[in-house]
Image (cartoon, rainbow, N blue to C red; front, side, top):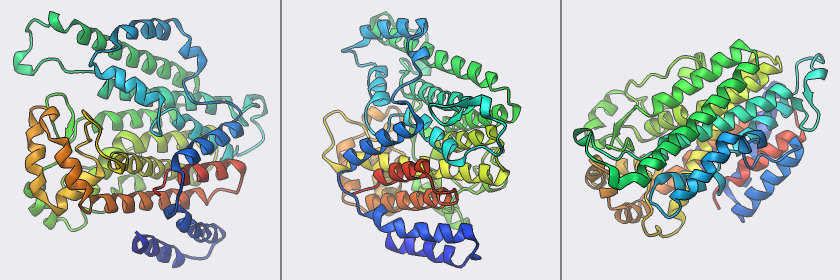
Length: 429
């Protein structure tokens, strides 16, 4: 970890000493704080609480006008029927509300970036949301981000495939509760996406709509890359099969650079899948990174900030999302695996471990029909004792440092300090 951070620090030191670069170099002093953390959970809650005060309102759940709408109220009443069932919508709902990975925090980050950057001129007085210190359109955008992210999570892991394609058409009357749960999940996600689309249109900004649509395209693409089981759960690429291909592409481990030129274009998949860092990066850039990055960029676009500031906001959001994902990937390995708990088979610790010991892929292959067939306790034990954990911490530090670098290009403010605290609160002990 130290060597990677020192290498990045040295690289920045070689750049021309403009005021921005000096600010970036000063941010490298934070790398000690990034690596030494205590009371992570308390610091996380404290950081969010302080950030919410800066923007003037709580973002711990969706806007009340959606939470209290007739559609959501009716869905909440119907969801009571699923309590006690095995339908994944129940656990999905819990993960949306509780824990460090609750997605409603993303709207808060968009608001903080909006407040940190400010507006390009003083012609926005009538459009200000005075309680938050941002534009009304930026507040709307923050709510759109929350709804899109929540809808995607509900659709992707809250719906259960009840039949294999070869068994389609069979009687499912005995699974009536599961069928009902699928209907609720689909309708719930669709309502959120419908509301998000309506709100997006009300922004009346074609460039923002186009940019956010490319983020939705990236999310869709993330569901169709790599191998998957019959429930559409992702599986890692075969490390043995890809070993020769990786050797033929020595730069395959570099981060995908397509968005360095034009972040509206689709990402290239050439020689990406199969390399642990490159595969992890493309999966989560598509599923998470571009949504948060383009949301931050869109917020500055609404404020008519310069293209350079918009670009900085994009890469800040992207790297923050990737650092966040690496942090969540490490969570299951901080303790013994609870009974019945599953691991993500495409998490960074597992992908890095497969590069170290590809024999573990034999266990993962059992999930080709269903990931329920995988021995997760064996995976947890092997990965916990291998190099994957430490390499994931390095990966998290890499993206944390990249996010901090972009953050420190913005002027110092309460909003910037709040974002810094949120980033630091994600770090490992």
